[in-house]
Length: 168
Image: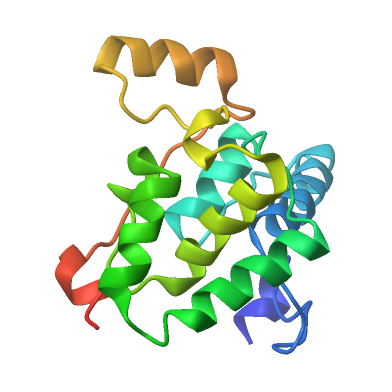
């Protein structure tokens, strides 16, 4: 009933069986934001993950989307680990030692994506430009946000301890 009073965007727009990712979200959200602003209204983005919000605010990394062959090769390799995270993690440390440090334990989706990027472009994800401001000092980050961000924004967060979010 609250949706009767306040127009909502990007709610129930895709079937749970459809592929949906940060690139699709960012594209659709940009369109909704432009529409809202054109009507003189203030867009409010609610929910989502930090990853999706990064792509919305700063743009997508310049890593290539996976080719069908790279996706198949990565899938077969992940299947070959048969759930053995330690072996899979060793492989990622070989392929992309930088990104392996940020890979949460048992995140098979991200592990597969790291392999897809490697097999598609021949280099690790960490070698591609990622416009998210990570690893910058406060002054450098403020300058980055001022120059790179697509919107003037404010963020408010509800959070839980990371260990609670990533329990295996």
